[in-house]
Image 1 (tube, rainbow, N blue to C red):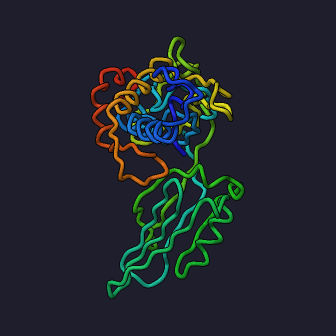
Image 2 (cartoon, rainbow, N blue to C red):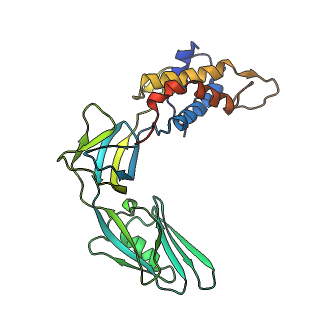
Length: 293
C-alpha cells in the first residue's frame, strides 16, 4: 500500500487540473505512489502513523530523542529487563547458537562433522513464552528452562539477541522489558521524551526499550476524488513539496503512441525522472528528514 503524502484531488488542485478531468488519473496515481515512496527513502522516515517496539541506545541523559516522529502515544519506556527463558543445545555438535529478532527465533547448530542445521520459529505463531518454549523443546537436541511467572508473557517483546552461544553447558538467555519509567514528551517538541523523576537513561547499546506510536494521519480522497474523506495532519509544506515533485515529472512526461499500458495510458516516465525531481527538492525535504537520533 502506497504511503501517500498527497492525493489525486490535492495534486489536481495544486496543478490547476479540474477534478472532472480523468485523462491523467492513472498517471497521477502512479506518480504519487513513486514520488512518495522515494521521498520517504530520501528523508529516511516512516511518515504514516505506526506503532514501534524498539530497543534503542541509552545516552546517559535525562532526555532522549526517539527515531520516529511526531510522537502521538507512549506505551512503555524502560531499561529494566526480566529473564524469561534459558535455551541450550544438549545434542551432539561442536557449535550451537540462538538468534531472536523482531519476527523469529532461530536455532542453529553445527555437528561434529561440520553439518549445519537451522530451525526458524515465527514469533507470530508462538505468541507467548510458554508456546515458544514448547516449540523449541520439539526441536531435536534443544531444551528450555522457563522462569516462574513468565509463561504468559508475549514473545513480541523479546529483546533481540544475535548468535548467542547455546552449546551446553552454556545457555542463551531471553529477556523482556520489565517495569516502566515515568516519561513525558518534552514541551515544545514532538520527538523528545524525558524522565519525569529526573533520572537518566542508562548509557548502553540497545538497552532502552521504547514502545510508542508516531507518524501522521495521511490524507485520503473521497470515493469521487472531488474532495477529502480524511484530511490527515501531514505538514502542509511536506504535501506541497510532494506536489511540486510530482508536477515536475508530470510536466516533463513523454507522449508515446506505442505504449499499451493501461496504468499510464499513452504517457511514460521513469523512476529516474522521479528520483531526479526528488533530488532537486532535497533542500525542501531536509526539514522533514531524519539525520540521527
